[in-house]
Image 1: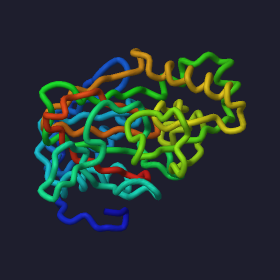
Image 2: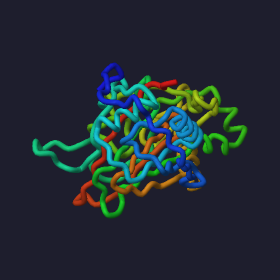
Image 3: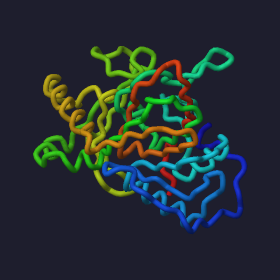
Image 4: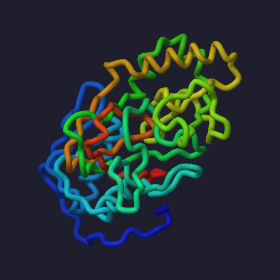
Length: 286
């Protein structure tokens, strides 16, 4: 699925939902959207209210949804153009430890995953990611979201000033180190450079844009200084006051903004099924 592929279906008569309720998920970030059935199209005014909340609070949660792939794609396409980041995985795939009939599994099947922003090792990372929960383990496999806006705002002024113009190298080796930061730089890993403090287009706010899994070094900085600086930034952005831990339920649909938050995953028993359907949006849709 790419941004040029048509999404079949649709409805010429979108529903105007009067009783949509937006609830804060946590002090750190996130909004739960209540009173919406995403199998039915939303009126533009309703969607704009939801999107505004998402751009300010980084993460949206919709509980108890029943979505086919087509319905999920229709909703995803309202946030941005669905597409594959160059050098990244497909825009539509399963995050799963369930083995298919042909013996294949989805990506990142088991265990905890360090914090990261999806595909930051590409030149044009996705602006947003959407996960729809189909099978969820009894416990564990939670997703941790950390607010990059709040992490940036809480940095000391002298640190912000010192690092304002700096860029960082992001790299990733899915085959060898899919879930944990390597101790030695992997040869041939996919890589790209981005500002340490990314400007969020919709709001104009700055967000701390580094992650423990994928940010390797600060460009043109002494290696030891880079390591110490990044270690401090990682600890800072992962502070509990910036983090919301999402405990999944079947039927959850979560949309997060890769420009303003990072995420990771807690451990879970490999004997329990965890299967979610992921869609990535590459470009902003005005």
